[in-house]
Amino acid sequence: MDVGVIGAGYVGLVTAVGLASLGHRVSVGERDPERLEQLQSGRSPIFEDGLESLLVEHSATGALSFYGDNNDVLKRAGIVVIALPTPQGTDGQADTTFITSALEAMAPHMEPGTVVVLKSTVPIGTNARMTALIGDHASGVTVVSNPEFLREGRAIHDFLHPDRIVIGGSHTDSVELVAKMYADIDAPIVVTSPEAAELIKYASNAYLATRVSFANEIANLGDAMGLDVHDVLEAVGLDSRIGSHFLRPGPGYGGSCFPKDTAALVSIADNAGYDLTLVKAAMEVNARQPDRVISKLNEHLGDLADKKIAVWGIAFKADTDDVRESPAVRVISQLMTLGADVTAFDPHASGTGLDIEPEIAETALGAATNADALVIATEWADFADADLEMVRVAMAGNVIVDARNMLDPKVARSTGFHYVGMGR
Ligand code: UGA
Image (cartoon, rainbow, N blue to C red; front, side, top):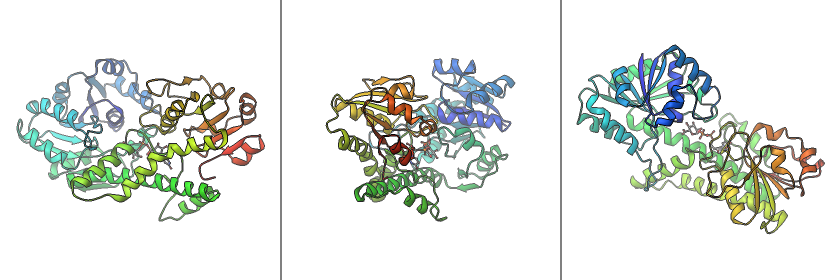
């Protein structure tokens, strides 16, 4: 099939490469000239496992091509997937301005029969609004909602092996066409209304975020009672009705999705006259979680002014260089505000995005050198394998706050560390 993708950001690029891997001819519209040039020369503007090699492979065969003008995409494709950013707006809800302006510009050029697929996370009712907007300029165009559930760091895998494909639409032919686009993927397809499809995305992210906050609450309770909850959460997760995913305590959830989508769902509920108490509580727990990392340092070092603190991890989670809403960055920022001398290290993220950057070390050991305390803020697998003997020798102090529960407390303590985990 000839498919178009508008927006070569995280979701759009992974979708485009994934669709090309399924055998479709994919044309991508990207309006940022620098990004476009990068993509046309086979370089991925984002760090994502497997993305760049597939980009090169499918560009070489002509299955994947990039254009600066969205109308060049329209000329080549009967299905156009919209993957434009929907940042948090002033009212807490996702701002659909990018989508609205792109569709306003494209609509007069749309042929009857064109199917517009909304992949971006959008407020409930967006499909209906976009259908009306396009209807003012073109006839016979339908809009189908098809939210994405990709995880950063695992996005290509998630695209090709999703747990489900959600297709929300009011026209059987368009829904069937979108289903056909995914025919080679082995996953259940949920066909539903556009509004339900829009809500499924928010409900899924809000539930996962709530689970993380739940795990953090149990860990905080463990801390309050002097109990190690590691085994507790593991045993809870073994209940097949519960499952073990998203029960790892930490410094809180971050990234470009959970914080934004939980806030959006609360705002959606407010507008509908319903108070979404549970999700609000999950957000509140999350907002406080980085403070707990700071208190753990305070407990062992007292005032943090002029203390030298090493922070391992800047990205919001492992296997990505994304620092948006990263809890690690929130910890670093708070430490710097308190006057601590922070040196951070991350295997892929090169900076925090803060106005004043902390010192960034080239290696984990370099960051730890002469530090009074070490904070593990992102769950990079390498941190679990660190040579603790060497770290202990390099550091001036002996405090480790393992905000991701990566290390074995027994091993850390026997190496001479004062080990503090989350609920351990
Ligand atoms: C999330 C969802 O998992 C995807 O399904 C969804 O498509 C995506 O948002 C989106 O809306 O685009 P992602 O933001 O890549 O994906 O990150 P997750 O892997 O879900 O992790 C989110 C945060 O929760 C991270 O900060 C992570 O460290 C934290 N987390 C996760 C924990 O603290 N504990 C856990 O047990 C799991």
